[in-house]
Image 1 (cartoon, rainbow, N blue to C red):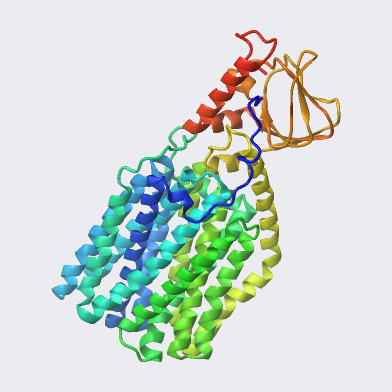
Image 2 (tube, rainbow, N blue to C red; image 1 turned 120 degrees about the vertical axis):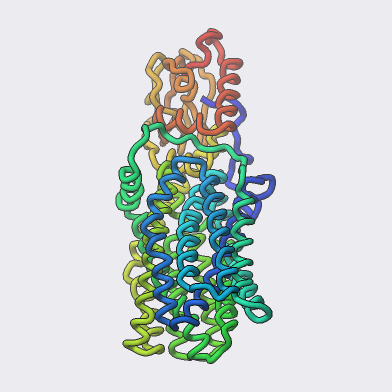
Length: 562
């Protein structure tokens, strides 16, 4: 039990400032900058390859090239993401960006020399496959660098802002290079950004969470674990489903933006980059607004709002096909994009065990890529069938209707996550649990065992086997050494760790003083968590030493037991 001074003000909840987790955490800072560089490469690359396709085959070619790029990536994403749960995740990030940068740079001389466009498409496929595990690996890495759900949200807000800046910078640089130079220069810029992303995550220094030792299994079994983690949790499957819906709309929009800019609005090729840049400006504004989500208990509902903001503006362009309207609509889509990034990735990181987190994000990337590919193909088909206006209105109407039908389910998921957030805030008042990264403390909160006691009832008696660590959620307990009261403990204080750490029986008795509510952490979960990080181990050892020094009437050799 904790015999040190009670941590009240210091352990109370303190709102996390956006960007504060980056201060003094070089690994997190480098990981975030790598993300920004990687997605600057992605957005400039998307503009360039879309224009190459459109020049050689119109809207259908844009859709087909997008599909050809994404299908192999979608099929390989779950396989590649297995490695992110096997090896340090930053290694996969490095390999992803390095291969992607090399493939993208190789496109430039081919285009400059009027080489075969099929080779350009093949290199685009290689680049896309290489990039496929990047977001999954990065999303699985970030929670291990955070210490609370709100800190995770804050970091995702910063990441969303970097993503938004990349949506602005990538297309606008592409537009500038197209206006003053050539499309080859865009590929050089995209390749250089990818290589910078690789350098930033090389030899990243941070404390890794030990993974359970289960023996080497085949890929299919490990891929199945990722799929099962999605299917077994209703909340995760709903979040994944709506991100997939957003991805399908995004694929359609990637076709629409080229056709609208050139055929409907009669703009120059650079207009495509300007519309994409408007998405980035909106996303940046959305990222600023996302700071209000820190501490929010309505993340899933905000995800629904974000999906609506992806669809409704597309319908608006169909109703009012004017350049200014298109720019505003693109900016609103950007706001929705920022909201999706923060809400979806925070929710999944909180609901999925760390051991399979990269695989779940890999599943998300896979089905998301397939959905984008479907959007690529459906959009030209709808344009041919319904005309441009009809296609825009049809795609734009889907999201609002679906989100309205699922709103009650969103509310139920938020209620479940809010309960676990309260439990985590309670656990973080215990000094030895406070240093635990988000994936570890989330799993502790998920497995808590609730116990209620009446006055005089024993939590445990001296001599019993220690099987749980306890945190007081409400009421007061009295710690007894025989008949002598050692200490009373109340809300937010933990006890019972010494018997677990020392693998011995309890030497003290703990009884309820009044009506008490306790949260119990099983022996296995507690020891796994405490041994997962250096700071938690140090705090546990300090607590054990303090107890040995201050426990009255307990022989020195046995004073570490409870």
